[in-house]
Image (cartoon, rainbow, N blue to C red; front, side, top):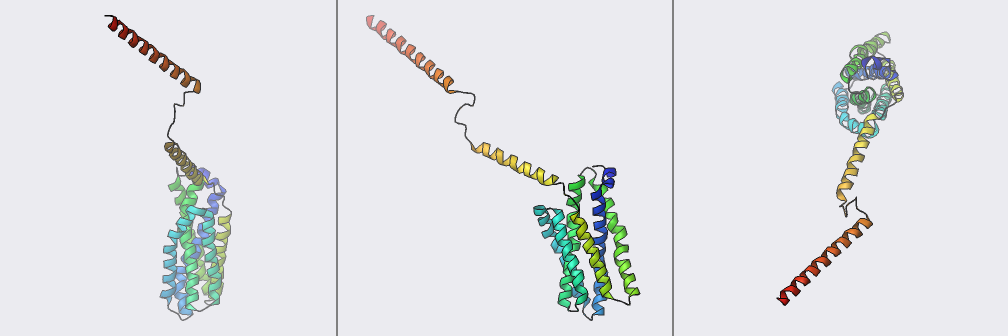
Length: 251
């Protein structure tokens, strides 16, 4: 698919806005973890460390899961965990539960980076993948910072540091990302190619294991004629030998 065709497609803009919403939700957690921990009187390093660990480690599992069920369903699962984390977080001051919620947000953020490449490649192909993916990434690099940390900071200033409002706002961002990823229709191109290759390899292995028992071009009639010809030649040979012996005896 060309860049022009990609920009005209519905899927491109869905992925673009997924990056805005989920990117905003993820990057805001980095900025808010310290200030929120101070507000509730807890050590901020625990919350931020949990978020970063979940964000990094989960990418291995989500990559494996993407190979199994596809990027669309994998993204839905990860984004939903981030949504739940943000909606629960403002209702507790327990550092363990807050850290668990932050881990949910980290999982969603890590999932975003994991599924985006395979999803874009499946939909738009590999010919212009670099350019198309670069344009998609503008949503995160340029817009997410405004929609996430900038507006979150503005909300805190206008509400006298009311974290309930800002976490609900970010939870809604995550929810929008979850809904949008469900609107994408995967083309299943890569999966079909993989299945065809596997089926071809299986058929080749089966053919190699079968030993040929006869010439495939031969028939029962041809085999019978061949046997008769051999018998006739043998009879002629025997008769010639007998005549030679008789001649020798006479001499």
